Image 1 (tube, rainbow, N blue to C red):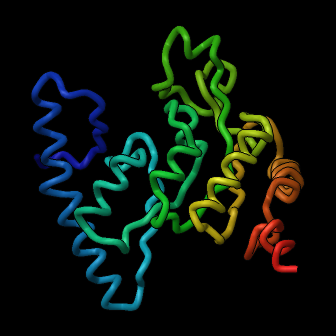
Image 2: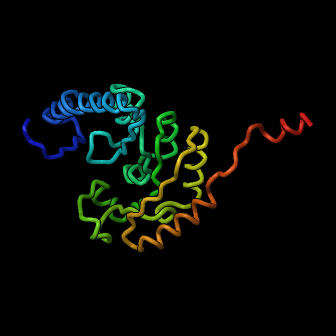
Length: 208
């Protein structure tokens, strides 16, 4: 138990994995974040945004919600759809599941190369520099999934009551940072819902 190297448990058998997962959560993760949350609250920090990512104990909505249940409502999510896309998780469903604990949002896309993933799957440890050989890669907003997918996410965020920042995170190996930022800004500016509706128009009309 003295090994400090990361170990991402992805299956329950052999039983060694199940035992290791229980150790990670019950002996390390939960106690650590309970202490961290207590320290944060004592110093006026009421929101701790964790970014789920494969390779970590918290890598999807289910594990984020488990940690939040164990630690408290100060635990929330820095929501990055790019990490969900390549796991096969629907980001709109994830936003609905995480409603009430959406603390921040990373606008970043990813592209799954079905030609490769159909042969090797999506658990791909090859370096990001070997772009053409990987089953998935991070992309600029709109270059992994079409605008309708992003419209659905923006709408889901609005329905979940999220009114925070859409923080563009550029990790696209195919285009320079400035170009990626500009393209993401243009698309998000078009898709973002800028106004707010207090009452549906038909209720306003009936009042008139």
